[in-house]
Figure 1 (spheres, rainbow, N blue to C red):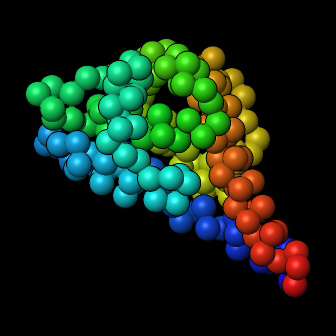
Figure 2 (figure 1 turned 60 degrees about the vertical axis):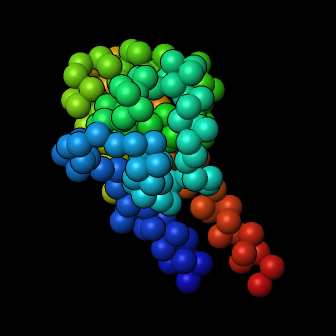
Length: 169
């Protein structure tokens, strides 16, 4: 019975997914719209919701592109989603390196969709990639390892919450 309940906790992740580039709006967004959309896409993935001050900080630190005339686009949304997920595990300097080397490695659309695909596959597998694919380029292998670290953290937190609720029963 306990194993079934634990599996239910893990299965909660299989119903979630990151949006792909084609799911993004094809018009510019103001800050409040970017925050709302980011929070909607990241529901269940983050502990604390996104705020305008977080976004301003990411732009100021060079993690995100600067908005054009206070308007944000799909590139900004992709950067925000990746930053928000990675910051639960990695320091901002590592995220900045990731963005420079991998998120902008090809077109932002291709790079973000690759991130989302790897992330979503790991979620479909119950929270991890099993096993790590062989024969990957260094870029793809790096993405897999980085994304798995984020997902392992989310799954670990979920299991700890479950354990703390059921230990005293």
